[in-house]
Image (cartoon, rainbow, N blue to C red; front, side, top):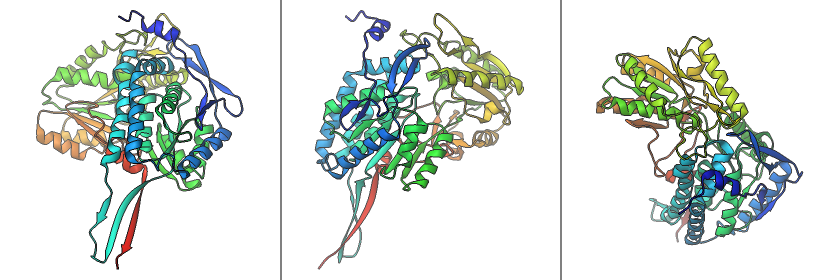
Length: 495
């Protein structure tokens, strides 16, 4: 029986901090590093290689050479599949290491990292591997004097810029389909949480992925990220993060070689609770988890709670009851549900929005206080605001923290109007016992994903992405495989 605590395992953990370029772990070309701080303690965790344009040049050159030499895309699909299945197996075998790095790096509760992030990463790679030899090309129905083929080919060099809130899973959502379709992939993890991406590189090498096909460049967005987006030999930039950065990356793609650019950006997701909700307790518990899970650092967080006026007071009291179960605590304790905010910058941002909400006239009905327990980390009690109007900043702007805004409505049409009154369109939800209302709402809501009588349901078979300024393109499902390929039409005249 394993008697070591997660703290014991964290103390015994060793990990790499270098970049991974052309099959080797290396220091940055400049020799510079940047600090990684454990957000639960405020203590230094590591110094990590700080990659810039010099490192990008080396990585892109290696990726292009690997693609042109067809060391990966030229393998029979069954061989790529076998290697990626082995990769998924290695990820699963190292799930404790992934979970620990995730928790130490960005403050995630260890139970979430072990229960979701680590297994979901392995599952994503496995699912995409299994799809490799099950996606067929087409023969177009044309005249008997010709044979018309519609085929898909790998794009080439794919640069993936991934966020800090789900570092391993978001990387896998891009690595899995991009590698499955034969591309060379360069990952630029967030400077806030680079450690699991480096471990992914280590395991990719062990799995047999050839040198140059998968590389990792830790560094800052304005340095390594921008250099990748502007590079004329990168064929695709795929990104998850803020809308502001997504807009910059689209601009860089246009300034350079018109590379394919897929952006999964911000959200301010509406969570509608109609008066005929069948299970009010379940809906309230879900409303609390939809904003508290992962410290509210979730692009699909149900941050705008729209409640029918006839049940508003009762429902708010229930939500407060369930939010009381989401208290910040040490991420390395197994029963912790809310960990630390990722860093000081995000911590101050969340607290500033709580102050803004009060100054704009909203009522702070629950929580919202800094929590300083046995550490010097960045902990904030989840907050619930009532009396929120659509003109308030906390209603309109993505906070990316555990801050819930409650607004009431009197009709389902008003709820839909309130829900769609946003520059974002990533996710939305509706609780109702009337199927007609559910279908009407799901059709009318301008969001990439709509949840009916649940929040955050789905699996690898469902595409993920947003409308409006929440981005373009889709992660997960076969749709993700398609976006990392070019469609080629071949017309053959027959004698």
